[in-house]
Length: 472
Image (cartoon, rainbow, N blue to C red; front, side, top):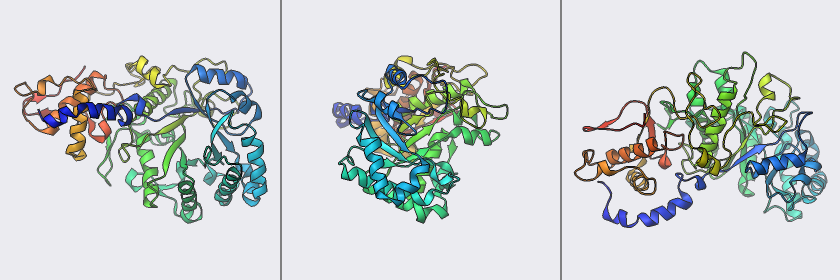
């Protein structure tokens, strides 16, 4: 087969390397946290909430304020916390550095480090705030950072501000991603420069549900829910996308790249799918919510990057911990929770790498296209995993070595003299190995990526006389 003797001798090195940097292992992935909103009158106490978080293995939580009872309850828990400075305070903090210093003293320094505050969200989706607070954003961030510096907290605590994707002038195709021109000079570029200088990251709220709901006649549900699908090719860069989430992330990456801020990391501070909605809210159901969040957790924790940034780990905060009965708007707004207020699960999905590993893969429900609380893997028809010829020989070879070695793929048929040895090409052998791994993993989301060296196809691929097998 196309595996050199030297490569075989270096397998031990590759395996050690993969343990720490490969997107093929759960340990190499991003992180999962959860948003703890409290627009409700029936939620459990903050102490009980912390116990719930710990019982679920969740070690990251994002708040929408700095409520003293919540921060005290989180003290000593080991849970990393993102707190927020509300939009209504932006003006005062931006205009008066003393106001920023007092706020940091009272709401941050008084609790840290016992409460592990590691980031401050200054405002939330400020660009769509009807109170026109955009001009105050970067000055407020700057003053809060200056206060952290004075208190010697700037190394431990980073500052950012969550953006909504509506700040993009263009998001389709992903390669055409661009920020709205009226925001670029006044606020986007200064904010990105601030994030770069302070070693922080851009926060983004990403909701494939909204795009699907508004365009259900065009966007396939499988594409929105991370289920196997034929994918969508970006005409601008030739990359194939198998999830709307990745396409939306890459639109933001492309927008940052257009302004030459490729080095700024992206953190998804909100994403989710409602378990219930009004009659006109297409796709809002518990089955779809379980499929979206379950598949998202698997995708994040198995370390798969996006097509544009295949090596980028993605940290994600699910929205939300609870259904919140006092949120205004359509029914979906009150039904994003993973849990009911009585702490019962709305649907059952794994939230940790260990949980993903133990849970394995649940089959989709017939007719529902959903995961029934597990991680859905079956879509319309069969799918196979093949090598991406554009990945380059080095990446293909390394991925092939992994698949046939640590990955446990059955590569006997591509050995010299075996059924699928011919054609003796790297792409043919890699495709066989990748597909063996993919089928062995029950075609789970994230198992046909190999750092961008592979992709899913829906037509049976053949190499010479050798057709790739399927698990069912």
